[in-house]
Length: 255
Length: 187
Image 1 (cartoon, rainbow over the protein chains, first blue to last red):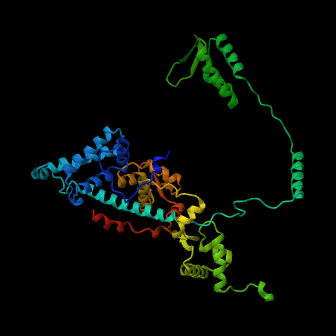
Image 2: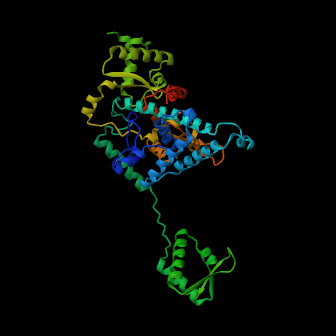
């Protein structure tokens, strides 16, 4: 199946229209709106409205209709679409205010739609730029450069005779002899041993400070074993963990 | 035959054009004038003249190949007219095109670079995270450090692969973003 990002699309085809179509098809078409600005541009075009004088009430209604439609179709409505809905409603309500009140509110007399129009125009520019890029890739896909040829870069094979091989092998052998071998034995304590030791200490003594216990341990590996051992004992044995003060040392003792 | 041929003689322009052609042919990515100049031990101006001459010859001949400037270098490639025959031979199909969201995001990055995710959001009006991931995966864009502002967001710019895939010699070859404004008025 194709990844959604790989879906090809056709810039020249009409923008999606809401018609009686199968649910899936409709969903696909709606999904094509790359974002709220896209949907908005489409609606403005659909309404044959002037972008510099958007009939905000009508467009807002249409926009909300789409959002509802997307919801009934179970298309997850991205937050961005909702933000735009809120913006549209805000603009609509601002425009409904009588002039006198607007002046009283001392708002600057900028058309409340202006910021949105600016954003739409900017978006449209980049949509056109995207189309230009789309056309360029289409052209580029019709151009082929020469394939790679064998060169030392991508083909490390070189001519070597059997004697070359022998020489190399001898060198390796010689180096092997020179190597001083030293084996270091790893001190290891199994988890079972660790649990047994720890149990002995908990049940013989009165209590054990876990911080002190961990500090006794020297290697990282052993520390991990010790930690697992503590978890295991807490889980299986009747012990109590106590912490007298916040961030204080943890004491383990038999329950 | 002349016995002195081994002596280093200044190459004639015809010879230079030929050897440049040979080098462009073997190079598996666009070869720069600088590389050609270094290999041939000639100065840049001489090489540039040779490349231009070679390009003129290819254009004049109008054969199956073209010499073009791409991503800061020169490349020999087939002419677009023959793509169907070539595909039939190679038995390949054009690779999947980028989605609308990815192309739009790429357009914003190409024109506004270096640009941050919030700045892209501002223009597109929509989150672009998955588109950015696709573009990064396809190596069309690269991270260009962080912007010294609140949250130090990552900045993105286009890559050399971008130039290659979109057939651009450099970013200045992109039409000016203002050129797209005229189309807008017709809305």
